[in-house]
Length: 290
Image 1 (cartoon, rainbow, N blue to C red):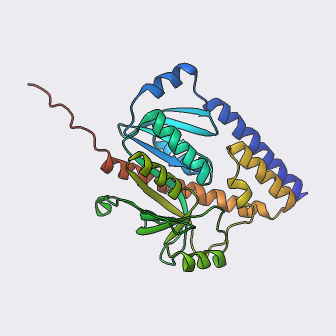
Image 2: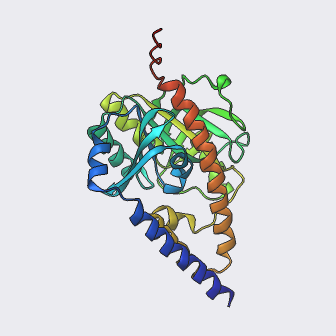
Image 3: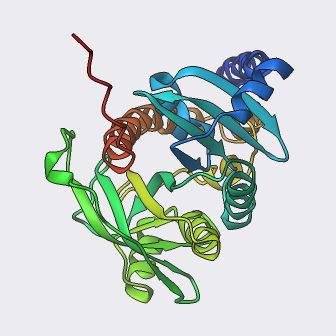
């Protein structure tokens, strides 16, 4: 009975997500108008739930879908943004970065989203700025860290340091501690090195801003690996339905994961808004003539 009820709830969520995705697609006129406008910055994120808080803050939001990723165009406190939802992983994020640099020529790229903590000092929902990214082969890219963090009005702690990019989700405390020993870093994700590499090749400034979704001693549900491979919200919810069917107890884990993502997304959006305000200053308003 519990299994059937859980499956029904997730199935309903799948249908609702699919309906919202259809409604979110821009009309041809909206798409043409949006893509002709210059932008102050591009924000690259892997998953839709990472972008939820940013979408809530953007005005004149237009959503375009195609080529395996989604593009969200809008204004954030007067600045024109292009936010790209690439899908998880290095290849997807690199492809999205190349496409958006070619199409929009943004003067700056912010690689943003969630990350896992590899150091006990990083707690869940802390903020993180990478001054260096490293991949599993030990290749490194240095990044500028020119934000005035002390001037920001942020909730929680902000950490600055090295981030390692890997190919698969790092779920367990054992895996996280082992990775930190092999490639010393404060945090881990699956996209930042690839985005920074594309930006370096195109000579476009890149910043990496993330929020910690799981601390070093937090264990993620085993279903996470299947969820992050899905390209759309509806597909991820479909994978969640299969998880609940196969392991009814996973519904509690997935619910906690969703609640955590909502908090992290809001925290990330707050961080991005203030960072973009510093990195992309608006010209002064013209003075009124007497």
